[in-house]
Image (cartoon, rainbow, N blue to C red; front, side, top):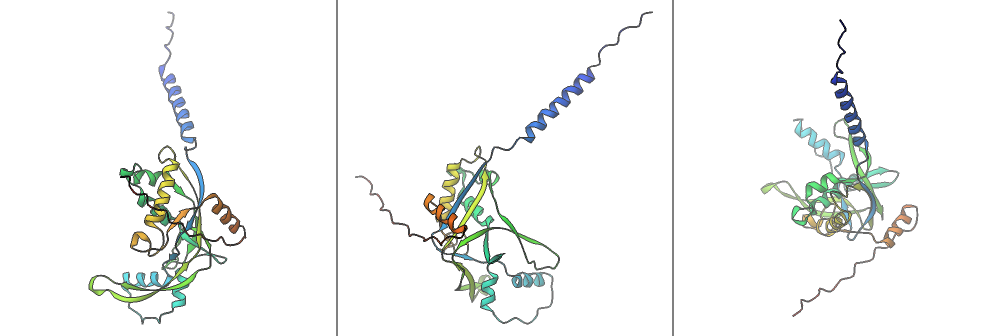
Length: 263
């Protein structure tokens, strides 16, 4: 008898199709996300107050939480409080947490403004330099994402503050660092399909006046840490300063008259 010809097995075709689909999907996944890189400067309109957690403060917190026996209270050292409040980047340079800048921007985002906070959170990325600071626990690591503060040298400021909670609040003196003239160079990327560049610019401007960064900012009932996006002229001056040029002069913003409503 003549043997019957075997029918083509469809399994091979299915396998080939599946492999082809996987290759196409791999190509799609390997494509670069549709992000847009940016760079801009924010320039301080009011001085910025920085307040990093000191090694001593973190150590006291760890000992309290670990139930360690309290030791005698050390004498106050305002100069050390001042230097400890700085985010030291080494070589005489100081920084500021980039997360605070993003938080200020996020605080202005809202769905009622057409820019939901969740959209900005996932679409916006800010670059930073990772700086390792001293932890409270030996052997642990504590990395901080910082952007450099460009500007004048830090000065020590003294403030009356209240610490504690409820009726246990007590008056105290706080010694922190302040930069009178300052600017930050912000780089990163944004997904324009989620947050349009003009919407991001709007949020940054709103964050500069309505929120601010650092201690005693507008968001916290203060006046410090206000900023604006640098104009092309200002950006050129700050880029020159970053290369070793003179410190730019901060011009006070001119008051704009409020237009009266037409009768």
